[in-house]
Amino acid sequence: MRTIISLILAIAFAESLAAQPIVRIGNFTFVLAFAPTNSADSVREYIPKGESLNHWSRMASVRIFPKEKNPRDYLNRVGDLVAQSNPAARGQLLVNDKTGDDILDFLMFTADDTTAEWNLMRARYEEGKGLVVFQYAVRFYTVDENLAPAINAERLKMIEPFGRATFEEIKETNKSPEPN
Image (tube, rainbow, N blue to C red; front, side, top):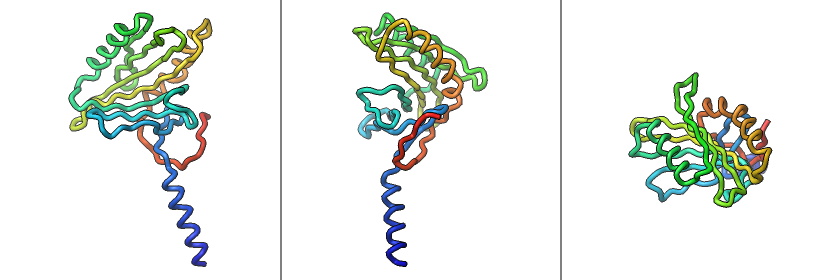
């Protein structure tokens, strides 16, 4: 009996060590991939299980800027910076009808125009914390005539779940999560 109890405790302990923080947006699950501890601003980046920060299909991130306070000003500055640094970039500031939150919707390209990245970004001010910025991005490693329809389909599918997503971390055992 002692052996069985010891075995059960060992398995439970091992599973707790294997637990990875995850966030969910719509039907997609993302695992924590990057969270530096030596930054003045907080950042946490999440990608699908099995992908790397060097080559990912989707990414969710949360950033906290303690000195920022105004969500709309911040999103407008980001939109301006994206347009200045990437002349081919396109963006628009939308308003979530249900929450009133501003959402920056933008597309940018690598310098060689071989990769596109579509992003949704929203922000809110939290007293005592600063500006909390939520981001969802999709990378397209082929830029061709199929890009615009793919982005439009992604936008239609994800803008509502992104607006509802809490980005609350959940501890989940080290399983292979897949979108539903």
